[in-house]
Amino acid sequence: MATINGDIQSYLVIFFLSIIISRFLLHYFFKKPSNSSLHLPPSPPALPFIGHLHLLSLSVSKSLHNLSTNYGSLLYLRLGSRPVLVVSSPTYVAEIYKTNDIAFSAKPKTPFEDGMLFGNTGFIISPYGDYWRFMKKLCMTELLGSRQLERSRGVRREEVTSLLSNLLEKSERQECVDLIEELLKLTNNVICRMVMSKRCSEENDEAQRVRKLVVESFDLAAKMAVATMLGPLKGFVLWWIRKELEGIPKEYNNLFEKILKEHEEVRVKRNNNGDEKEDRDLMDILLDIYYDQNAEFKMSRSQMKAFILDLFIAGTDTSANTMQWIMAELINNPHIFKKLRQEIDSVVRIDTRVQESDISNLHYLQAVVKESMRLHPVAPAIPRECREDCTVSGFDIPKGTAVIINAYSIMRDPNLWENPEEFIPERFLNEQNNLAETKLQDFNFLPFGGGRRICPGSNMALSIIHITIASLVQSFDWRIDGDKVNMEAKSGFALGMLHPLMCIPVVRFNPL
Image (tube, rainbow, N blue to C red; front, side, top):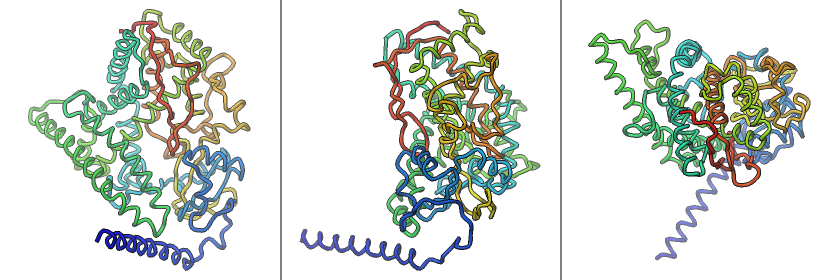
């Protein structure tokens, strides 16, 4: 009986695979020809079915860098069934971010377009239109602009203090620190307190639940991205990961709905008592808009949840990974570490803790941060999508073509940067050692993207990065096992360090 069941299972598998392969072949050989009359950009040799997928490795940034080096700075690829334009030159980037900015103002639809994980309602990937323009203005004026930056200064100071206190305790025990974990806790706490006035360590550990869900979402998104490239095989992949597709969005929705209801209850009590909340978090601001009958745009509940999710995805891992790269470069370059500390000591009294108000005078600190973001951009491949037929340098770009701005290659281009593989913060200083103006309009420095969809949270991210790095350099020396930190990067779309930065903090100045 076991043999019979085994044979039946084998026959079913063969039958199932035969159906899939047959469908794939029929789709490939009988699909209508397209783009035959278009003047498309150059394209490397492609293979049937998979297109140019064989030219990509798990390290996406390095794969794109090799492609641009070997085949040119404007390439038209086919990743499975998905047409993609890869742009690796500031000249072409200028045509996209300036000349054709509206035409390229869309973001590629996420794999969750069918309503999963709030669909495409998030601000980061929402279609260019009334909702996006409303949220962009709201971000600049209330949510992520200078007003909120000043409003959350106390939060950043308290969380950096908590980080330093923890490091001091570990220093006393000469305990090795996993720096990325400490930095992730810092950024997660800052975002959590800005969004819902809670820290990771508080009741129910909601912030930690969000962080866990963010990690799971990245993994699920990678699987979904592969599914979208497989054309007729997409349904098979969706069936394979069906439990994750049901579980993760449901947990997100339940968690954010609970947080929203808690804020609504407090809001009702406050309104009934005629109280004014002085320190409003971002959830309060969103709820005010949600209940405002005269609001410029009527936000849905899903849009509020999606925006909160955007903040955690864009503001937690990215800033923490950037700071880990910076500290790794400083440890590997002790002369730069020493020069940065000397600058801090010259601006801040030796017995005084560095403050955010000091950052504007710490030019070398800002140059160090910029140089690290140039070498190690956490978003090495910036996505856009062509929302209408247009041309770039005489080449036809069809509507619906995905676009990858190859920031990694641009910021390591030897034609743009002298000794591009070396860590040289001085390249961002002028002859007087003041911070040189970074010509963003030249599009050779793209850590936050560009055009109208440039990252709206860049100032918020830089505020936490600058004060954290300054505090870590001012307060501690750092010992590692060996002479150099391993600078190998992870595979994937993001550019994180493969090996966590493990080091022992040695107290140089007690900031508490």
